[in-house]
Image (cartoon, rainbow, N blue to C red; front, top):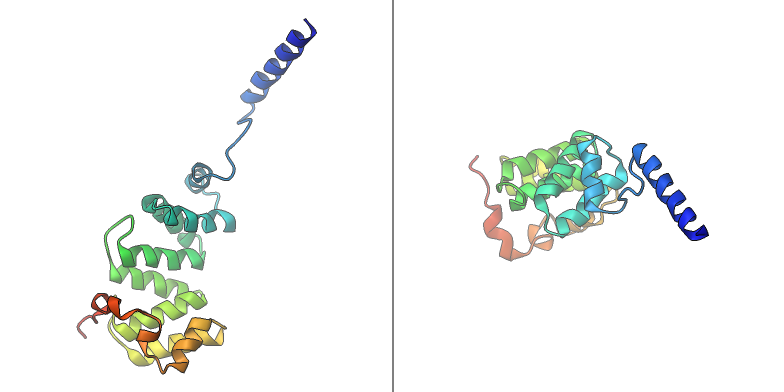
Length: 176
């Protein structure tokens, strides 16, 4: 009898608490991350979760997350938006949109954004080709300590050092 009373008491407590909110909210899940996005609760951990979401192949969700985080000013999310657009993940392939996101990240002094926009300019991919400006962006990324940018400088901006030649077809310059 004593056990029944304890169980009834626990159940009564559960139902009372349930009226005040969610008793056991999801914490480390895609659903929780997307709920945060939907309700505008964006922080570094929520935005960083997009990496795992996109690696799991959930590109539409990753796009929604990264776009919200990018609009909130997270430059790392801007570089991921560029990556999604560069590969058509969760939407259409768009070199122009990729370059736009790279530029936004570069304008936020993000070393990866500076490097990526520099590559866009060197290649003329998504933007008109401008090798001088491209090298300047790469140089700024190297000044900020980005190792791959330093490697590209040391290789005298030979793009084959940072991009497999199998991808050369993809990076044909736009007409100037």
